[in-house]
Length: 437
Image 1: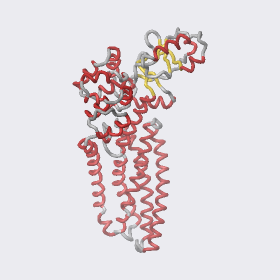
Image 2: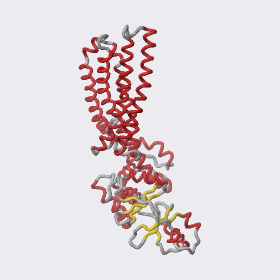
Image 3: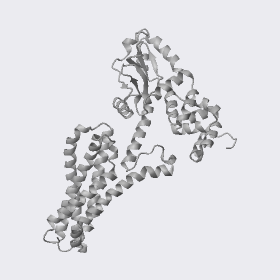
């Protein structure tokens, strides 16, 4: 790395192609204030990699830049044997805060919260509280949107915003100004549920309390943005028919990338073999009415597409808390109605297509009306079935205790492909009996 001083913008442009050692060297060559801002703006994985690439003597300064919750995240990303040494680099108060945070699971509110927040006593006057908060703000508080009123046992009594303080008389007691109906979350609540509470109540921060009602920290909206992005990324990757990646795409090794995709792809391939078996079972019908084979791709793709649509809608509604398992019967009625309507639309399009092609090219022979009726009737049944199956599969998977996102669109499509062929050829046997069959 050149000794010429870089700017943060220049380092950002070449960041992706640098090794961890070069990244660490580049950060250290930035102007000090700019270096601090650049380092704090990195993702936790990148901060951990840069710290490990630094000399041991340099790590202390950079570790102490991190807020307790960020330090806990970084420490949990490094190898187990290095965690104690990074923890020792923090000052004693911060070390205790970080150790307490690391006792929680990463996906719980306690693992997401910051222990640094504005605290007040209920017996304070408004003027005294404002002066006290001014001093607290210099101690690198996570946020000063709200101040929390606590008793001597640190139990949460109320909350007061800075707007409330500024507009109140300075001699008024804080207990008269604070709001007692505080929205809080338990420290063991799942982080996605925390995100839903914050979004539902449009909060900038939310207090985290233990079983005794003692406040342990706060979760801010910027922490939730990371949670929502991570959860959405994981769900989208699962919906695509693969395991979720543990690291960003460009930072995932080729071996790991293949392993994450090979399992589901192999399972889906084995599932599609059932489609070939189904085709083989109806070999005689296809031999007698070759025209049926022309519509197989159309039939199975329509069912798979409708099932994938329904699965995606239901999984997203589950993730947002819009539906629960108890809503399954209402969803059955809605999706069955939607599936029949969609099937009728596609059946009409298919019917018109066959009739037009027959009129122009005489493609389907003298029994084209029966063929058209077979395709139309099959589309209604298959699309309705695909929609219903796609909507119900996430509920089945949730009931079994797994992530509903595992009911990925490719998996639903594979399931509906096989059942769609059975529906198609059975409808054909009924309608074409005595003519082509």
